[in-house]
Image (cartoon, rainbow, N blue to C red; front, side, top):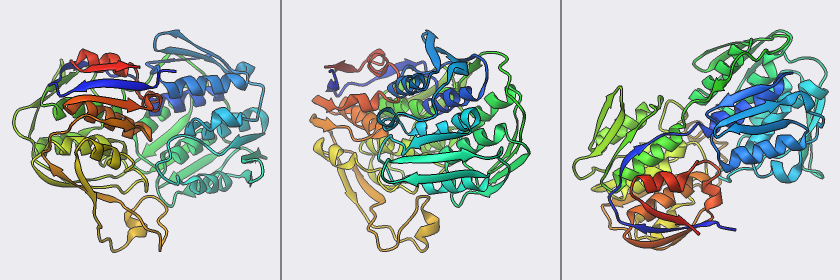
Length: 439
């Protein structure tokens, strides 16, 4: 099986990119489609490994689904006939945990295993389970089988406040509440634009969901009615990846379908010294002078997204001075550091004094446990080729970028992980002038 890229780096890249649909919206929309009792059509669905895995997984539950055009998926949930999610295939994709919602409405009970996906932190499953229980869902876990068993005695109602925001938890509880019997109020919810896209999809189909900042109010309805094909928003993570790639090579890029909700990133690249222009034809980023090192710390939306920081690290290897990256959302997001060092990057972990780490960090901080949450990058450095191994999705994009920046030949292994979230990566990089081939 082909699972590596061979890259000849060191070229200045430039051009334009047509962004694909957002992975983190498409996956949730596919699952939300199972709440309907009729066929649903979704547009701008990216052809990525995670989508393929999810479509295969719901087929094992009896659902009929296929791409009817390159980026259009048709989903027929009327044939859904199983309430136990396959352990093997669910282990490959974290979003499988959200199947609780449609399966509970269809069968009244279901069996869902621990979720898969990238191992970038412990992930707050406990917050999600507490939320389900607060709405009246009975949930218990079997350590022998690895499955959660859930039962819906009555339709969800009530109130829940997340101890810390979680986008998976927010989306699951919204889905569970959409067909509830009364009003559900959720507080301290995540504010990602992909959540807003999910709410838009459900509301267009008759749901009654109102979101104001971190508060969501849901008036339950009897059923959802599909009206017209729904188009998924563009992928902001893909946008940042290609912007970072081109700027790190000293080039320029045009994004054809504008991505909203990247304002904090735009502000940071302005600080770095990048020229940005916006008009009706697109969004333009242009390298015009040596980059200046700028610190960032990750935060939930609308802050600097955790998925962006690996790409930022590569950009900072090209910037003059020292920069700090502090990861506040996940406790294991720096798996790429040792790989970048193979290419000559000057990166080290540094200790950051935090007065109240339990509140400062958005993961479940444990007292007495050793964490490494801040790195220092010195630049500019001339990266050279090497052999790199991908550990998680966003680290994969970071390492591919680094290899394209580095002079000489590099081999990047484990690219199927990267392709979980990037559609036509090789083709798009090639269109910008990059020398990349899958082997």
